[in-house]
Each structure stands twice: as C-alpha cells, then as structure tokens.
Length: 181
Image (cartoon, rainbow, N blue to C red; front, side):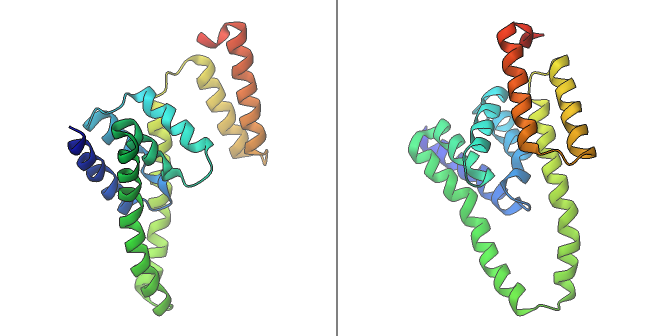
C-alpha cells in the first residue's frame, strides 16, 4: 500500500515540478486538485491546513509537498515528495540556465521571457482561487477578502500589517462568538 502511495506522490509532484513557473505557489491549484479530487488523499480543509503551515514556514512555497508526502506516507513519503517536486525542475533549470547564458541575444530567449510572465501570473491566480474555493466562506470572510484586496490594490499599505490586522480581527470575532456567522 505504501509503495503505491510513493509512486502516486511521484506521479503527482514530478509533473508539477516541471510546470512550476513562478515558483511552487504557481502549481497550488493543480496540486490541490490532484491530492484532494483525483487521488483522494486529503480533504479540502486538510489541504488548506497544510497550505497554511507551508506558507508560515520559511522556505519555498513548494515545501507543501513535504507536508503532503508526510501526511500520505510518513517520513519516506516526505522525502519522495521533496525529490519529486525539486529534482525534475532543478535538472531542467541547470540545462536551461547553461543555454540561457550562452545565447544572450537569442530571439527564442526574448520570446520565452515575454510569454512566461502571463503564464506565471495566471498560475498564481489559479492557486489563490483554488484555496479560496476550498475554504468555508461566510459573510465576514467575504467582507475581509474584499477589503484586503481593495487595500492592497489601491494603497501602499504593508501586507504584513494587513495580515496582523486580519488575524487580530478573526481572533476577536472568534472569542466573541461572532466568528461562526
């Protein structure tokens, strides 16, 4: 049973490794789809919990793979998931960077630079949307999401201060009993 899960971890994370333009955050939507819907290893809330832990920890966003691997198959699963998420893209990056340095004026290079920007933004947006869709949303959560998006988009307010304010507001609401509206 564990062997099947280890192979499954490789089948999920190795292809995602090669698609992760813009970092690990860019493949969160597909990662959530694979782990929750396709393989059924985790529920939506379990995935969200692991996502939150991975974002709170220092390091790359793709460290969520280690947490998922650990949840699925223990320490060995964590190691297999890390190798699967980091090794394929590292090999591709090594050869691509070598070519990139040796062909500074290539039209192909300029085309890739222009094309990959929108791809990375789209993947990041899809990841954020997948997380939002799998959260239990209530009117207070929607209001907070709208206010935070507006503040970040229209002002130069620090996102770190905003996270602190939102966390404090949810703490106050939870303690007052209004957090379950």
